[in-house]
Length: 249
Length: 271
Image 1: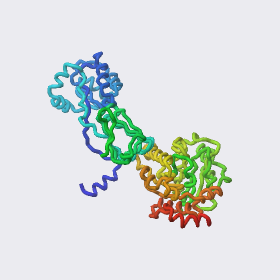
Image 2: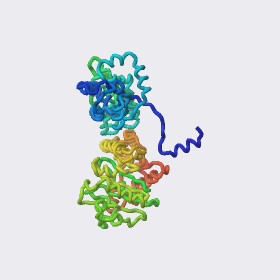
Image 3: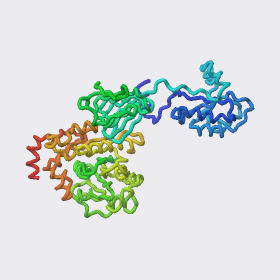
Image 4: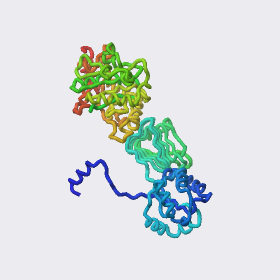
């Protein structure tokens, strides 16, 4: 692209770009089944954070031609389970029209076929068993929460189900928590609690230890108990044999 | 459009009002049309430090409530051209400050003034939040002691999360540190935090170090911004800080005891 073109582009107050997103497909085979929503509820509860306000595409492809049900009320119920229906695939014409009227976008049917093939043998089993499409598995890697600004007094940062990486200092009166490890590439002057959901293998690493409180999986030590030999030095904190250890790095 | 500066600290008694008065006067002396607003509703002080307490008729809260026009409440400084004071109410409390009311007045002032300096009350409650919400720049007033540093740290966090710029995802509020009541002798004896200690924790640029000075109390008792006491080291330090705020490269002074021995004892008596 020419530089003139870029200059013009910079003046435009928006950018239009294509992007692809991963969305769950909710495969509906029997929307009138009394077990439908109770089972959906069980599924959602297994990972409430993962499902909260997750966009879904509703797949009506397996509905029989004569399927008659209140689509709007059905979608309402789905929303009540904290899923956000964005679009739909396939289905008998009246159902499609009702879904369109409810504001859903028709998704290309070709992709639905592909998805089904890609899933391989699994969906065959799913076809006969519960009507819920298997949601994509939890990502293998949950990226660490990265904080680049100083964590100020009174602030609290929690890295849920992951590690916390801070490239600045943690001030006195601040609190940083993680279900995983905590790495601080600055001074730790506040409170740091790693493995707060019980992960005993979690560790705290910092460039300069001057903490108010440190804790791993609930075992804690306060500032007074931190030895002068490691104070203001690079230190790692971890559990071994049920005791909290602090070792210079 | 005028720029909105907030002078804030979290902690009380560190010198926000003294610094607001000095800074606003300094900006006006440099030719900028400046207004300084007292946000400390119920604890009206700025007008005393500016020496205009006997000319207060209408105040900030009257203007917010539509009981007076902005021009009726603005007090023109008698000494400095371009300098105006918007005093606050002594009888009301901080609940009188509404976001809409404050915004309307700041917008109106921004049409006319180059700089609008908001003198924040202590704390992190309504008054302080209102004073910093619309700010473009923040000057953090801190004393070289641990409780003041921690409160400043807290207010920096508030600026980063609860100001208009933070809420709307705009460019963040610029933040600079004004370290006041600095006594190099006591720092030398280890009784006070060093400049570097404070900077290490707060991690924001240093705008200036104002030395502990008898001139400050003397000036505020006679209702004269200390920056007008040109012989005092505090006055000079504020002049330097204003220059740095305007982007000039001025060396820091009054930070070591040797210089103080030569300078301020002589100047302290003659001033």
